[in-house]
Image (cartoon, rainbow, N blue to C red; front, side, top):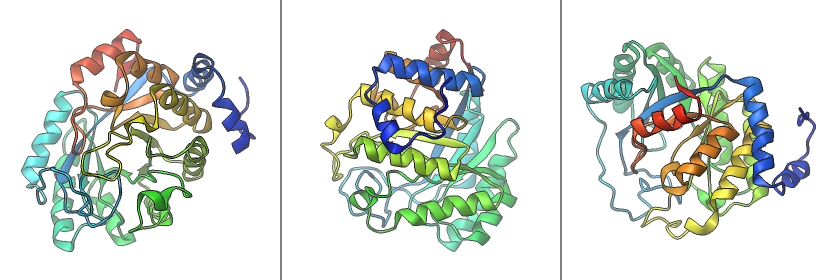
Length: 312
């Protein structure tokens, strides 16, 4: 198997020009060398939705955008616990508590700690969270409460970041991931592709992630939402380009769990979703996403069975 460790950005760009089937064979070998035929299942809940002051151009929850989502304040602890139990019944082994906004208020944070404790107590469920830009003290507290893995995506490349968001910097996201890891919490850090970035940007994303070395890398495909500045961006990336990007990410990140996240059901056919799994996807979000519908758990289980893969 070829050693890609010394590849330059230009070398990775040339890989994009290979036929898709050839790229999938390369990335599949890397996956098989580092993992068993197991696919991790994670479910999420939007514990607080909407009214976010950040201006991310893809997001339905931003106050700067004009979407028709139903906003709600922080949920009750018992509601979140019931959702985690339901996720477990659908085959999820991880449950992520997600809140909109740059960071929670002190009052919200106290309640979130209660949520974390309630979810972490459920046998067979690993508690994850995605709460924005936390302080070192808050990170310490969520770890003590039971958070095992924290999601904070870089979303796009450093060079493309300002075209997507201006209310915080790319470095803010990177520094948060570093603090999470320094606190001994696993990091879940991914991207959104199809926002108008080019191949070089996608390679830069993967190389930035290589430096951060997250446990899990969610790969979201933009599902353009009416009322956002990117509502007409559906043609910015096609299915073959998505699959080639999955292959490139697997080649650059041979030991990371690559996760199918938002957009995979609406932007990829069933056959191409299978190709992505063969190429190197070994983690999936089951159930619905933050503001869009997701997958059917039974369908996912049947697909994995066809590929001789096991949901764990």
